[in-house]
Image 1 (spheres, rainbow, N blue to C red):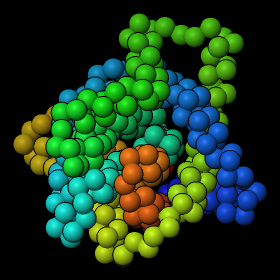
Image 2: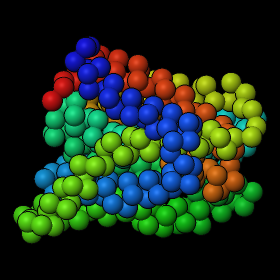
Image 3: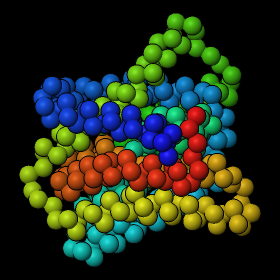
Length: 319
């Protein structure tokens, strides 16, 4: 467990540093969007391009991993929306609650953390989860949110898919996959620039997560009842990875070609805290951002222990 904490502690400590820097105004609030843009449009795409260019395309689009992960995400969405509606929460807010329950922070945190823990072999499965969440999970939840009061689910799905295609992350993964299949390589100076940007992705992304969490919490002007956000945190940190593990073990028992290493990576990806950018989406779509911000904040704070425990329980090994 000490070896696991040696890897996970710096990751979560950088998130805390970003939170405290923003809270103390050492990092001006006006600088947070710039940090977020740097990670999203420069550093993280370069990191994902590098992993995509060295990962076989069969892993990036593995149908077994895709079926398992997307199927579990859909179950989490259904479970969370059903529970939220039953407690009197509207469809739009229920949909965003489901999004933070099923969409882990794989882009900003998961890829570098799981590669650090389990080696570069983990890049394929975890990058597949990034694509799955961008195109399936987020599209479904945003479509549900936009159908609130209008009933036009089809139009909501189309708008959500256009949003996913406007995200630079899947395009960087796709470009890396093209380089992998064609066995291409970047010219020396360009490769060095990409490397420098990619190397900056992890620390800046983690620091930015903390700053974004502080800003989201500052923007909250209403008090969210504990019963409206605590169950979603539990679903994210416990139910989601447990579902992936249980159904993955069922796959193996039925003879489906799923190896234990890949299953472990998918379980740990599901055990990550909620994606921090969902608070921005909630604000943009007029949902209860206070509830979403609290879910993300608590899932991130508690994940230091729950995720580290999951790594030890499911046999993750530090690289």
